[in-house]
Image (cartoon, rainbow, N blue to C red; front, side, top):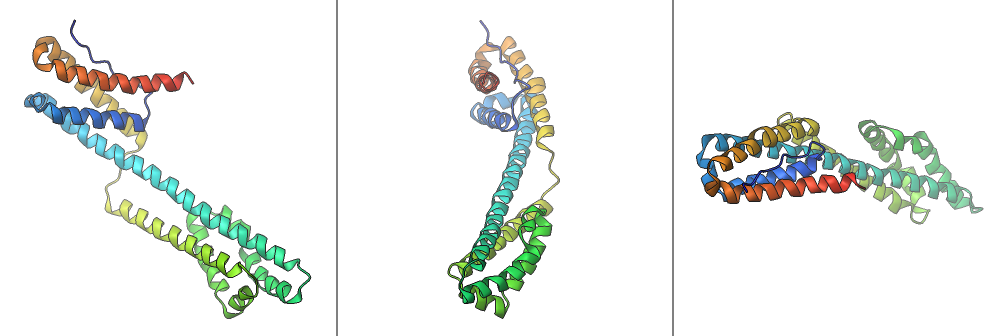
Length: 236
C-alpha cells in the first residue's frame, strides 16, 4: 500500500505550522535527491522563505509580550512608591511626615494614572517624573525615608530598561522589511504545504514509490504529528 501524505489541518496555529514547516525544510535538506526535481526545489525554497518570515513574526509577538512585562515592572515601582509615601505621611513623626509630603506633592502630579497611559505617553511622563524626583529637595526628602531612595532607583532602572528595549525593538522594525502578519503567513504556509508540496510528494510516490518512499514516510509522520496536536487541543 502506497503512502499518502495527509494535508495539514487548517485549524493549526501559527507556532505549530512554523514548527512543522521547519521540520519539512529539514527533510528536504536530508533527502537532497528530492530536490533534483525543479518543482520540489522551488517549493522547498518558498517554504524556507515563509518559515523565516513566520519565525520573525512570532519573535515580534514575543517582543510585544516582553514590552508588556517590562511595562508592568515600572508600573509596580510607581504603585509601590505611592503606597510607601502614603504610609510615611500618616506617621506621627514630624520629620518623616514632612519628607513624605514633599515627595507626595511630586507624586500626585503624576500618580497612578501613569500606569494607564500608552507606552509612549507614559515614557514621556515618567521622564518628567524622574527629573522632579532628582531635584535637591526631593533627594534630601527621600534620604529621610528608609527604602524610598531604593524604590526610586528601581523605578528609574525599570524605566531605563523599558526605554532601551523599546528603542531596540523600533530600530529592528525600521531596519527590517515590512513583515506579513502571522495570520497571512499561516495561510501562505498552509497553501505551500497543502497545495504544492504534499500533492507533489503524493504524485511522486504514485509514479516512483521506491525513490520517494522514505521521504514521503517521514513527511507523513511530521504532518500527522502536527495534526494530532491540533486534535488534542480541540478535545480539551
